[in-house]
Structure formats: structure tokens, C-alpha cells
Length: 192
Image 1 (cartoon, rainbow, N blue to C red):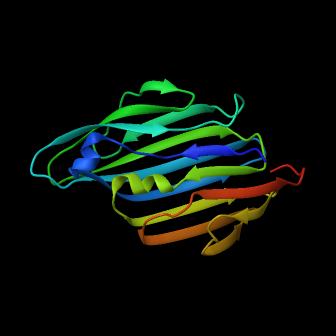
Image 2 (image 1 turned 90 degrees about the horizontal axis):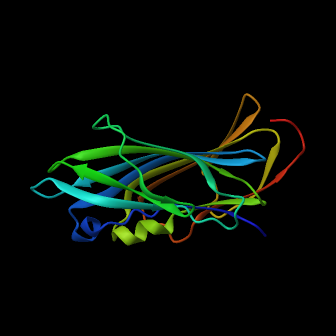
């Protein structure tokens, strides 16, 4: 089975010093017969008494040369700035994150990846690298009528139907993932 591997690992030397911590995430996934979209908001808190800056690495492993991320956007909502993406390769990218003392920064990251198989993956276990559970996490998956979901690594909390689309919802508090978010699906051949 081929998969689309989507990984979020936010690692930095400061994270292990517990100056900047990763506390919340709110992610909307969209899945079509050709692409997997990630539209995510991440909260980072500086718990120290001084300003802190870290290099954040966001890896996006690929399973083959056809499922490369072909669009990427990152924006620091709190500061109203667009961090410079560095070291961008097919397997990930880095950016500098600065957080003032005792403050919070919210970053928006969005990207699209080609779907080559019958599943899409978002790595949740990377949260373990921060050494603490997420205070709150919310995940939504939106699919059109051309996609039939056949399985999930986490059972959705709720499922909605709106305007011909299915919306799957997960909400977690004090969440330390023990497995990745995997979406298994098949296409119906209908137009979305």
C-alpha cells in the first residue's frame, strides 16, 4: 500500500530547554482524489523570562518522487510576518521562530501534497519530541463525494454532512499521541 506521508516534527534545541513549548494545534485536512491539503495553526509559548529564538524544522517525508509537496506557505500570525523558509528539500524545511518572554506566537502553515496511493498520513507522534502533551488539539478532515473513507487510525468524534461534503472531527485535551493520523480511502470516480 502506498501512502502519502505527512509529518510534523517541530524540533529545536530551545524546545528541549523548555523555553519555547508547543502547546496547541488546530488542523484542517482536505483530501481529493489527487491531493492531500494541510491547513494548520500551531501555538508556541515562551515560558522563560527572556526572549527566545529557535530554528524549527518541519519535515515532510515522501514515499516516492511523485508525492512531493508542491505548494507551501508559512505565516507568523502574532507578528504579522512571513518567516523565511530555509533548507527546503523534498523532505522538509526550516524556519526561525522568535517568541518574546512570557508570550505566545501562533503560526499558520499550509501545504499541498500529491496523493499517489490509498491513504494519507499526518505524523502526530512527533509531539513526543517536545516532552509534553498538547494542551488542546483539533483536527478536521473534509472530503467530497468522490472520496469514500475506509478507515482511520483514530476514530472520529463526530461526522457531519454539509453541501455534499463529509466533515470528520477530532478534539483532544492533554493529548500525547501514541500513533499517527492515517486516513484510508478509495475514490468513487465521481467528480468532487
